[in-house]
Length: 308
Image 1 (tube, rainbow, N blue to C red):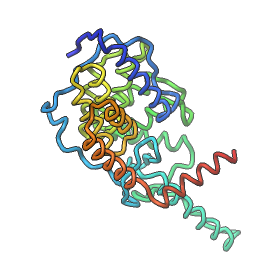
Image 2 (image 1 turned 90 degrees about the vertical axis):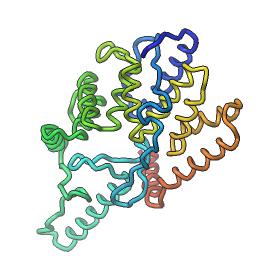
Image 3 (image 1 turned 180 degrees about the horizontal axis):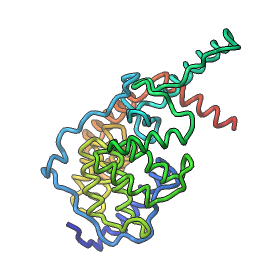
Image 4 (image 1 turned 30 degrees about the vertical axis):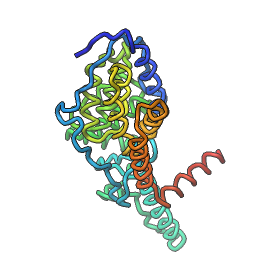
């Protein structure tokens, strides 16, 4: 139910716009920016409402290295062939090994090297050589109602990638299809579109946004959980549910939620025991997402970027 709240609306507007800015850094400059001031807010589901605070599913693992996947803004790749999400370090290592094998073949058989095609390390489908091949494959997957295909095409429309002209309306439509098919991060994308509004694409609807955020949070989306906490904190005198959302999110590695818990502790709204507990879980979650291979990949990536 949407209720107008003069006290706290400006705080909510500031919080949501700040979060939109952070998501711009996460997802790129194509994120849908707000065109209207927030004038109403939605009530988040109560603690006992439909399992919102039921045990959260564990963070997924990379099926190659079997380590906890990084958060989406920090090194994951969704394969266009099978839809599996891998850590980018494993994708890079797979490509590097094939390139080294091809170099040895070229040196040994210069006249007929029989070069290997780069394949998905899971389903063994060949990686498309061109963006046109990838688009054809994704559209074929869309015909089979594969949620990840709708999501990936939506990203290409959102950012104007791989020959597709930037089109925010088409991006939203593809995200909506992916969300309806169960894609967790498509639910977050749809929620953000409803939350900040864009008159050319979708009108602001905080109640609709909250429904998608709740659905995503139940499936372990830490960004959705963070934003539910932001809404609770800005619209309720009782901040306990806000800090409960942030505590869950921070415990799964979300830095923004950890910062919110820290501010709550500094302001006397979070006990020292609770702060230290969440801090331990946050550190443990981040440690589980690290490895020597991932650190090496990011170090090599930074070196290449500095050289350019």
